[in-house]
Image 1 (tube, one colour):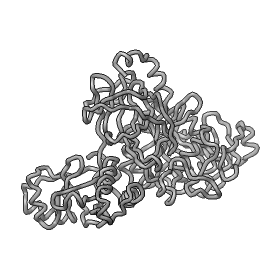
Image 2 (tube, helix red, strand yellow):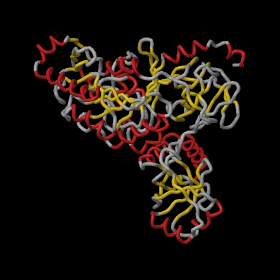
Image 3 (cartoon, rainbow, N blue to C red):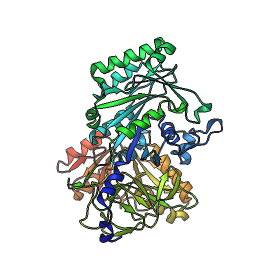
Image 4 (cartoon, rainbow, N blue to C red):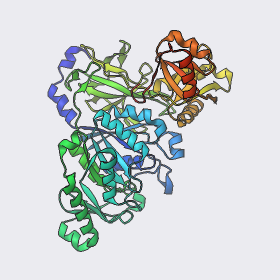
Length: 537
């Protein structure tokens, strides 16, 4: 597409279409029900006819967002997934994130591509460690958060205690928009705080279809629910009177959170959450480039790559780069520029993604997530743009690794496939790959945030590249960035650490422990090393 063709796109078309988009992520601790909620939202949008379960219990199929074999086997999300679907006149771009802390680097990248987040809490557990970490990322990025307290169909904590915890532990004011009628484990329905009425839910077989709803006015609810209704009304009013009255500005500046209660596995309260996202979630807005200048929505097309994934379709073995559209109208067939390399990139094969299912995409607007197929030239953090002036968005960080292992192919005759697989995992950010002259290019070191990343990497090398490997764990636990490359020999010759080079050129000094680092720095005061800060390196 030429510059003159781009000019033909009416600016009001771009801003209008961007206003229809809602791009958000679901964040939670493992086992809070995140993948179940993701599918329940799609079910209510009528893009699924029945919901699944991670293990396919009772004959139900596996969840749409957990498509990797390991995810289905272990019952957890270990990679992010994108789902795009329509809900009324709104286009939903829902990014499901890994719940396990070992994959927090992937989650951080996903959060760079969204405009809001749904924070999912287990009614019995409240705020858990991984949820706290992810919320900190949202706060750092100024991402507004809607809180959905899940599993109210099971025994759990007191509703007011859960809301108080938000204020006390993360300084986030709870603003109730629905309130449970019946204590946890005896969920009768929900008080709609804004209308004053009640929504009563009816169970369906296995929760596989949308739960029918009955709407009662306050008088009917009081008559039929009695003490349960009165308790719900009194508790919600108490929280509202103590600072929990809904305020859109406090939600937008991420100092307060709308709170809803439900049970995703039964599809209770899910429609209310989806309607709230359509009503309140931020629309795509102009994004700051690497120099801090805003990129207007109606500027020529631009996007940044936040994830690269191979192996979604075994029959094709293609690679997809997921990119968030930041400005302009995207049209399949455009030739855009990769700001990292300065080289052109042809967008002949572009797909709309719904979990593992894909369909050809012709047009996209700010807020959309597009899947660029056979994108071997793209890496996480790359910016794509059309026409001048060029634009580059801030790069995405690598986290400080905590675990290290030498990886070797069991069959030396598969060396070529081994190198290809390792390079692929590095380009996707599945692991950080470190190399050194001392160890040789044939024995790279995998560096990861959490040990489960080793499992994913070895599984994919075996299944996708036909290369079973052996991992030899290294006893390093401390990592620093080497400031002066000339000092490399001081560490390599010490017997207490070594220096390896990451794919991006960063030289990382690894030490057995803090004592070893202290000994070397005392022996060599001239040695310059600095911390790698998780999430910002």
